[in-house]
Amino acid sequence: MKKPDKNKKKPSVILGGGNFFGNAGIVFFILLFVIGLYSLIIEASNKTEEIPISQIARDIADDKVSKIIVKGDALTIEYKGGEKKSSKKEVDASLSETLKNYGVTAEALNAVALDIQGPSGFFFWLIQLAPFLIPILFILIFIWFLTRQVRGAGMQAFTFGQSKARIISPHDKKQRVTFKDVAGVKEAKEELAEIVDFLRNPKKFLDIGARIPKGILLMGAPGTGKTLLARAVAGEAGVAFFSISGSEFVEMFVGVGASRVRDLFKLAKQAAPAIIFIDEIDAVGRVRGTGVGGGNDEREQTLNQILVEMDGFEPNEKVIVMAATNRPDVLDPALLRPGRFDRRVTIDLPDRHDREEILKIHSKEKPFGEDVNLEVIAERTPGFSGADLYSLMNEGAILAAREDRKKVTQYDLIRAIEKVMLGPERKSHLLSKKEKEITAYHEAGHALVASVLPYADPVHKISIIARGNAGGYTLKLPLEERKLQSKKEFLDDIAMSLGGYVTEKMIFGDLTTGPSNDLQVSTAMARDMVTKYGMSDKMGPVALEGIGGRTLIGGRGLNEHEYSERVSAEIDAEVMRIMSEAKTKAEEIITKHRVALDAIAAKLIEVETIERDEYEKLIIAHGILPKRKRDIEHAE
Image (cartoon, rainbow, N blue to C red; front, top):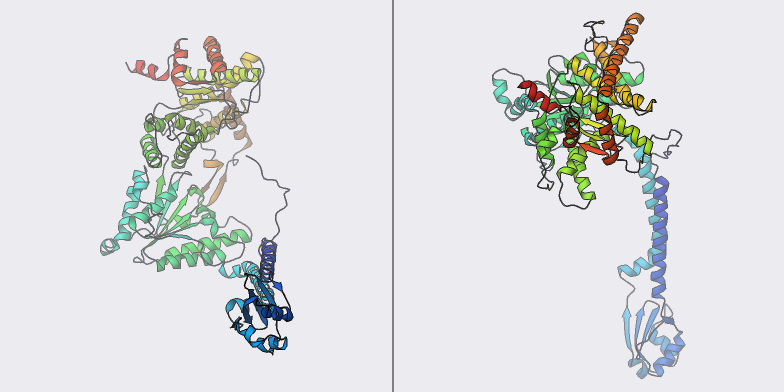
């Protein structure tokens, strides 16, 4: 990802709008265009030849003139041959008297049709007044642009306190979302069904003395559908939906956030029944009293106003506040007490069946080929969130369109999985012969160790085609969905991660930068075993780190380094022991199955990608049973 240039100069803002001079330039060019157009009109009107009165008198005497049109002092002379000429006469004298003075007889004048037209009409006056109106019009437009720019900067101060919430009307069918549009999360939908029932029929609850929760907190990992679920509750109940982000409350001016909270709740009460949805509420709902300075004071005032507004609700106001966060551990205890966000709904990552249902929803408008099997795609995407699955389906359609095909095939979706997980293929990233050999042995080492160890996940694919930041990858997936991971599984995963490192060192007698990410992942996994999960016999059942390295207990921060130097040294020693034992285990496997390693690497150099079926045939030929066949034999 391209990093932003810190030295890049930011555009300056003049009079509240950087486009002021651009707008003034547009006005200037419009003025030039109007003046040019006016000049063309004047020139077109002056194309006829202008002759003196004496010439007209001679032409009438010679019987050449058929008609004379008089408009004020302007004359248009039409000749019998169709030609037109113009002239001027004296303002105070009539045309007939003027012609008689030039010797035109009454008989000759009677033979000419005279058409006297008054100098009236809109176009006439527009032409006459245009030289005066155009400059005035230009000045007015310029002043309007000027005041608009100034108003954009200065008048915003009067709208700071207004809510910036986006409103979805219950009658807006295009944006309406219901529970049918949300796959999976069955428990969450059941929990929220009574909220829908209350908004539809509050009397049933109030008559029995029940009070519906004022606040519902949706907790879950990013992309699990918290916002979508909140919209579905409003859609099912048919009520107005007010959506705003927690960061939109806070500005640099003191009191703006609290004012916006008051305005938002006022609007919601007027539109009741309604739902207020605050996304990423941890932006304003963090524990109070931990910050210093105006910014944090303003955030705390905003949080205080939210708490006050929620306490001010009456049971029959029919306004419910929903909020979403993926950091519930940092929220202020006052937000979570009974009477506020006391109903907490956890939204987990979807399991295999839920992933299949989500894929069906995202595939409604996509033409599929006959070979598409969404069940297989769901099996190959453990750990994917709803947002990841949407991205997967979209990437599959993009791949098909890029190759000018009208239908999305299974191959497109399989490639889309890898693109979402690892990034796009870097086809221009060509490896040298030596680098290709090193990468092939590196990935073969990962795959071989994973296939031999009993608690490692089975290998589905090996590739030495660069994707994202990876020069190659080994894709392994569990045989079945699992929520818990055992100590034996952790140890085998660490050994599998070190398979590439060990192989490079054993085969080539040297190391490259290739295993750097493997070392980071495996070391972090070993440290978590020691400090988080109590999986070290030496350290015992002690949690030395909170979730994310920092947790909040009763509003007090517990930092990951709040233990002695001696304990820190023991943790480091345990991590090194786990890594050393995993390295030894990987070395033994690679030494024992060296022939299989060479065969896998040679195949990779030849074809660059090995799928699961082909890989299993390869290791079976060298006496290694795949995971699924081994499990069947143990069961017998």
